Length: 349
Ligand code: NAD
Image (spheres, rainbow, N blue to C red):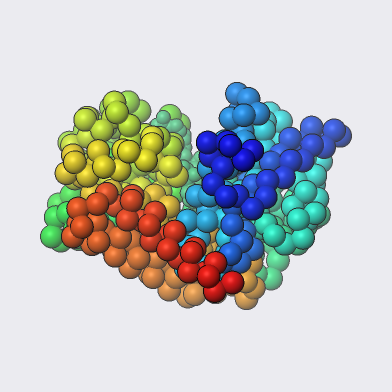
């Protein structure tokens, strides 16, 4: 663990195996200096245990940075389950997940992530008081994706302001990759703002729905990188800004909700060199975790969530301004800001 390439001073990493349900789960806690760790549970059919561990470590560190930049009193943690989310789920599995989370006695709060929906977390919550993103209960905050999309849309406008000198989107074309939960809501905001939309997905039904509602033009999944768009908004997969896609992009702004958009940290400088303004993913997509935080803190209020999202978008603006004036990549400026916030909290502690 201690010489693992993705080990970055993680406080603790827990392994859970439940023979009865087949649950294979890791919970990685990167940092609790800002507060108890919080981050969703991901279910993925990993190729190996090594790949699973790597994902847990990277994602939990990512949550420390995301939560720090969102200005919420939570540290970074993440649970990953090894399995096929279409085939392997059971009530017993999510009850076992709940017991695993409960055993950490509040050092980690869980919620939904890729492969996990509100119903799964609702089952886990039978066994633990440390689950959020629930649909039932006094403070239940439900599906976080509309709030993630709100932050992405407001952040995208901030980026447009800096790249084009105006945040008026009525003359802009936006290429949206992925029109699932987050991407679908992002399209709705963009259409309301008058933007022209070009969309791609591998789910035909989602494409038809968004196209009919928002008048979007559909292109094949691989064509989305080549279209003539002002803004590229990735809302599906990670690592989609890479050696082969970057030279194809014609957009001047990248602003979307997907996690881990850059294939590696060096891509930040490559994106800058290509004259593209990149809104760092973990800064722009914090709306969902802010919504979850409101639930964990109790007495959920949408006003509080909207205010926090506005502050998060201001932080994104500061990151972009500092990057523009210093010439550093936005990704590097964001990392430094997040690290500074964590170091300051550690000093205080
Ligand atoms: P989702 O599963 O609802 O949507 C993802 C969409 O991407 C699906 O419609 C899927 O068919 C599509 N897709 C998959 N492969 C594709 C491809 N090759 N090309 C185009 N589309 C493809 O998931 P989501 O909750 O909307 O999350 C989307 C991204 O945003 C993920 O990276 C997730 O980690 C991130 N994110 C989500 C939230 C949230 O609140 N849901 C918060 C922060 C970050």
